[in-house]
Image (tube, rainbow, N blue to C red):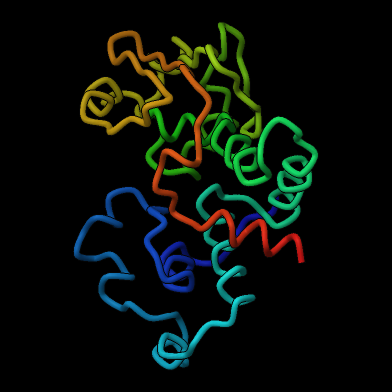
Length: 212
């Protein structure tokens, strides 16, 4: 996958909302969107005052979701196409479930990774096991009752995991996940439901964008 060269702070300013793409900085006074609550570039302040069209709103929400899950356009569109094919769920719920149940996203939500990009790197480098088997595919789709653990070798040899047990104690966890700070394991206990959470993007707008 090609790397998105746009600065993370510019992405947040462009979408007009905090996407928490930088660990720590987003909650600090140094957050770019807090200091400059308008779009990037010389026309930024003028763009903030401009009225968005329906298409503009849909595009902004789609871009927000793409950045939140660190996906490229083709990847995101593929998820939408798969969501349409689901019969047991609405398109929005199916899309949300598949995005949330990606291994890199779950690693991030469990508190193992400091950001979604950092979590993807950890997965790609083979630091995690799913149900006792090493998995290094960030897009791996987890299922209910899957158990995610940090490889013992990684815990011993990687500085990034030195303070993990302490970080997990204070981590705010989604209610469809469970984590045990003692043995550094996490579990998917239920399917994430888009109706039960305040999403960082408007799912309806995304569905409308691709249904045009």
